[in-house]
Image 1 (cartoon, rainbow, N blue to C red):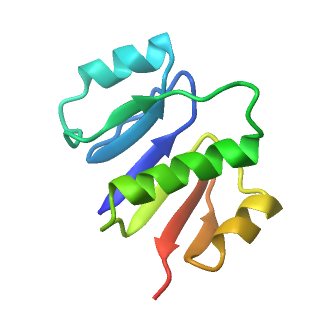
Image 2: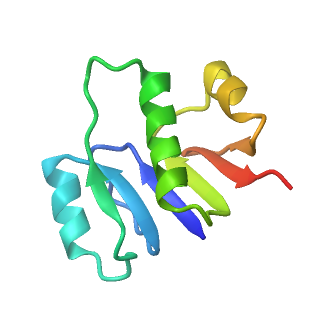
Amino acid sequence: MDVSIIFETVFQGSSVGSVWIVESPENRRWFERQTGLDGESALFTFRNSENVSDMVLGAIWNVQEHYPEWSQITVIGMSLTPDLVKALRDETRVTATSKGFSLSRSR
């Protein structure tokens, strides 16, 4: 199963399947207009006081727990940092992308 985690507060792209997208008025409108999303897709919030790496890791770990059969997680709107690579490298293959990064299960 492929899952997208979107941190852009004004996401304007398209997506289908399982999507977790950060709460904002614009993203709520986007989310409500979608017809091809998995029923477990959701809007999520985070505290502005959170460390960015901790926030991203928390979202990833929540998605991994919610979707135990995930095969790829695409993170949009956050850059891959050395702290994230260090925290994730033992259990996943991490790849930087033009819009963020992706995780694939290590085989």
